[in-house]
Length: 107
Image (cartoon, rainbow, N blue to C red):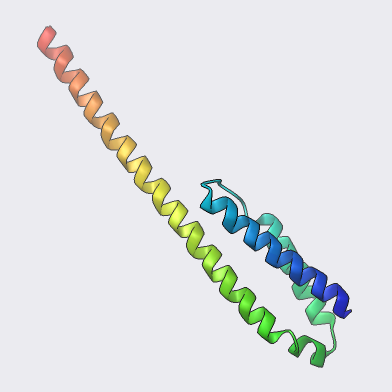
């Protein structure tokens, strides 16, 4: 059971690191695979003897920190996308206003 939990923990860490890497490269990514892996890890931990489960507390605390950082990365990416969309919208409004003004002065 310990080997199974270790493998699942490693898979969660790897997926979280890959997500952070893709986000830092500007690639939009989903967390569905990470969510699945975390669910599988938690199921294995719940099925494990209590003492074995307790031995993973430091690793789970570290994983929680990694997931907090991933959440912050997602929020930064979302904020940057919102700012870019606002800038595009502002430029579009300005171009539309200019086009209307230009069209009305020609008529």
